[in-house]
Length: 321
Image (cartoon, rainbow, N blue to C red):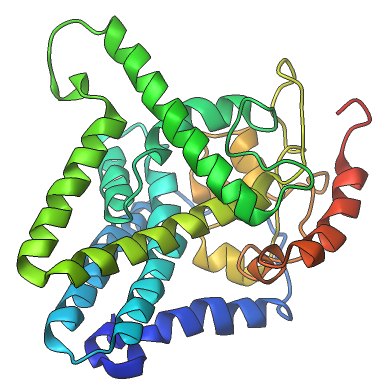
């Protein structure tokens, strides 16, 4: 927010802070494996809802900066990327927690965050496909052994959109009567996105749409990067129950703090209904060589990533997998 409001090259501040400073510091900062859970109260959920407001404010400051600052084309693109880091590293992370909630209002907030980041498939595919088929060939969001981040990003995104659309069509065929839910979620999301683009074009011109799409691309690239490292190379059979052995975890403090314990992903798949503040660390779970924040340095360079991860995959894989 501050970078967008300040203008000039300050617009790239969040990218430098998150991908530069935080990721670098995580290489040296220790872990915290304690399993103390917060007592139920207003704060854990309040923190999630604060992120809804902050995400909309971040996008608002980006559009305000575009309209009020004299920014070069390169600075405008950089601003979209930098704001997209927040959309992917905060908004989508929070939406992941919210869409798992049974409370309708919380789920709608999660959908709003996904919409703000330009995502049209995660709400369907994550809940109905990923959690059911994680670690198998039926799950588009499970990265295969030897698959690069770039190949995974394309394959996973295309397949998740296709599977989400198909599931929604199957749901609609079974429904009787008409309601808001009688519209395919993927199609409805695309329609709402198009309306948003028209509004942005009307008020901010072509660059309003372009900058929004840049931030959306960055946000969803970070989403798929996270999917990539969460399950890389870990496999199970269709009939095998999902356990703490089928997701990579890390207790690096920066990842735990800034990603609301998303890095304890093994427990999330073991017990998907657990709220983030109750997730536990397992000694038996596969452990990443770095945190979720800093692993991006490895993932962006496939040979380096494979040299770090492939021996670990072979170590944690069951012989039958």
